[in-house]
Image 1 (cartoon, rainbow, N blue to C red):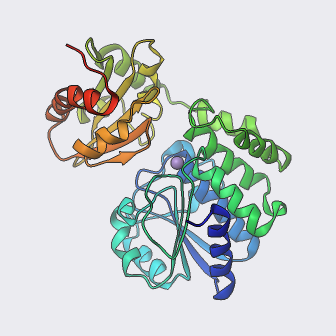
Image 2: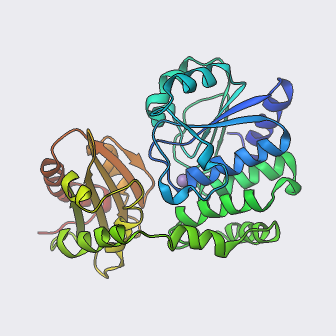
Image 3: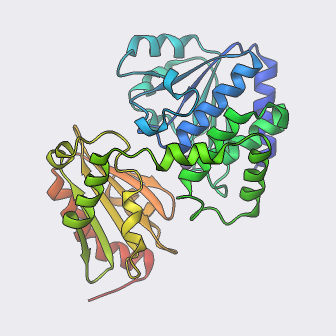
Length: 344
Ligand SMILES: [Mn+2]
């Protein structure tokens, strides 16, 4: 097995051996702070290197991430499918950030699979696909942490300006729940220290991530916790389900539910929290757990998903109530087989 350092050298070679004049940068479907931060940071680096870049998404970035320098310039398949197809066909290199397979690229996937340009994965999820260059490290806090290593190993620390630093920090901060989980390695903090030296404006990033709520969003979160949170006695399992109608009532926008699934875990005895939401044509599930309870196994086996030990997601094409029922019904099997917890 190659080391991360060797894989980064693969990227250096890939970018010097061929003429790379333009690149396409793609986050995963429903981008989060880590995906958005990585895209914006890499775009800034490409800009500084004089390489033309495009950030392409299959859907949209949530509103609260638009403060990241290059996020507002992205092109969405939803608005310009034909432009996306052409840009992917014409590009010299495709960066896949914060995901490990083209299957996480939604409507862009067929274009990416058809393209002749080599693909570069930079990611921290388990079991990445085989691509031309795969830079994968599951021990890091976030893709943004790994991307910092990639950028500085290839182009040196001088390329990291305040915009790169702000974007990378936004990803590190959000992917770790504000440095609370996946963040026990000293390296993560050394890296944050270096970002501060490079001009990171922590107050600016925090303000935009955590102090830009709309009142309707706050009311939605309040409603979810007051009226919709169920905790099952047996398994210390918290479930919040929200229907399309309920979301509409609170003028839901993408990103409004960010972080909600973590809140029930603040209750002492709750060990798994599940958020189930009805979207346009599917039901989305988000799982979080404490300790050694591998919710990624739960989503993989029953909910068409995957993820990390303590944070995973899935999706179903069933009515909302049936999905909630399936979570409750599979709980005893999951807790017994994967967590060694058996209750009456
Ligand atoms: Mn991530």
